[in-house]
Length: 282
Image (cartoon, rainbow, N blue to C red; front, top):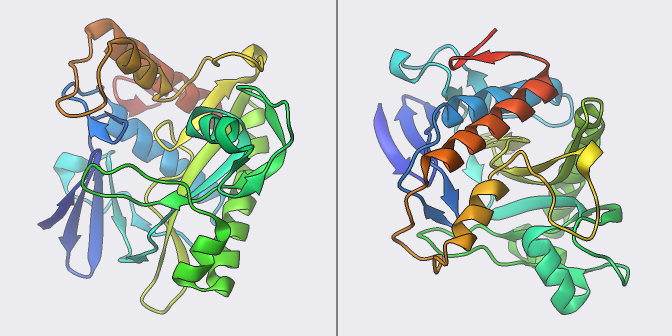
């Protein structure tokens, strides 16, 4: 295998005509990788992604070829994938108001040019899920909100419509599945590419604790920060240290590592109804 790219969390290898996507235990916040790994994080992300890819494959093709035909040392955290020409847009669907979406709303009353009602607060459920794309920055740069018109100008109106519609369809399919187990998917990021024959294909990861905000439904209360089963917990800790959000990032203390790992495991188990024991699914 040949290493093509080492990202904040994933390493991408070429293996013949295929790609091997390996999820590490690294964690990043504010587009900066922290120096402390979260044990089992890469496996948890991979296994939850695979679970969603399997259940939602009828909505749109995905890049997965095999989770078994991978190098033994990466078993459980790697996926053999189709090569895609990735579309340089982060496709974000928001069903609730939080994070950067909340800040954008407070400044403009809208997100990515989508106007929202007045009077919403942190954690508010939106009247309907909205597509709020951002740029796909690299090299430590920050993603920026863009409008649907910006996406259309970049890739064409018909592909942009398809990108928006599929993103919303995936969220609409996943949200009730998670809700059955008491989990709110507040928002989620998706990435797409084109296969060699030009088919729009879902790539990267899907509805994981790195790409989504997961809240316990029985603790949801608009007007305050929500308890989260995702890396928002690490973001909140990092912000509380006074760190300026530039490298180098602070070392994560053991208690925060343990709490983060526990949250990733709990949401995996609640959504999939499988048990995670010593890094293995039972």
